[in-house]
Amino acid sequence: MQIIGLFAASAFFLGLFIVAEKKASSPVLPLSLFKNDIVVISNTIGFIMNAGMTSLKHNMEQAAGSMNASKIDVATAKELAAFQNPKVLLDQPKLEQMQQALPADIQPVIAGMIETLRDSLSDALTTVFLSGDALVLIAFILVFFLREIPLRTSNKETGE
Image 1 (cartoon, rainbow, N blue to C red):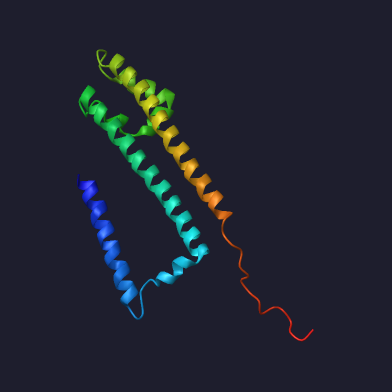
Image 2: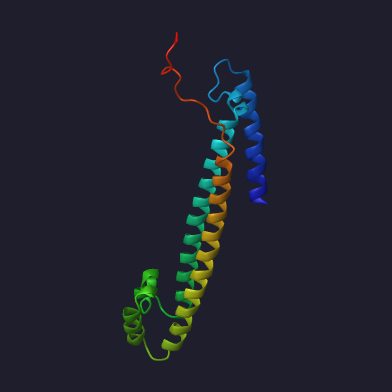
């Protein structure tokens, strides 16, 4: 419900902004800019790329948070302090050494947890990167709709 309220408030304030910009003699953002297809497509590409990066950051933080929460549920934080760094999953000898240092009754649980963490991290990253690839592809396709305009015409000689 809160998200719907925020979207409604955003739409309301966007409407107020548009009305204010139309009435202003010197607007901050001239609305006539949006009649230019280059401006619209370029901003759309930027928005899509930003959405992809924000999504990636959010999903990575969420995956890291759920990894930490599941560790605390299995054993005490002191015993698992070395597992706080997800990069530890990539260093097999160090990981084995850390597992052996834990009490014997916790080791099978930790082995299962590590496998679950690897699987969930792999699934999360696959989804995130495939989503990011789709957004980049959409942005790349939109680039082909940009109209080419000459940047300089003063280099042409007159009188010939």
